Image 1 (cartoon, rainbow, N blue to C red):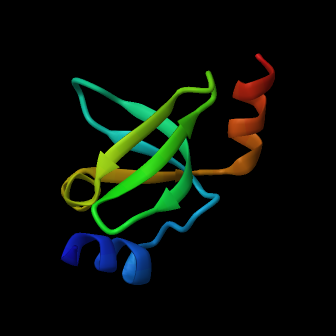
Image 2: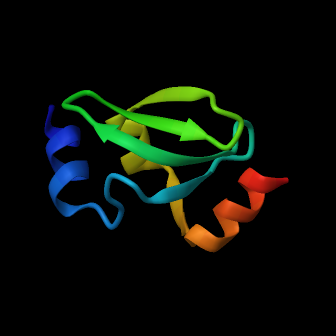
Length: 76
């Protein structure tokens, strides 16, 4: 629950932002749909919905992707 509060109130990303999670095994680029107490819901350009535990978002490097880059990926 603490991670959820930290992610929601003091995180550099918000609902609606497109983020890239820097993980060498499972890199993810998706739009934040919702931030819950225990997990965050993401939606990829392919339409997949992913739920990630909030503590994982605090441990991994996150890049906020510009909306123009994400729109280009949706069209291709």
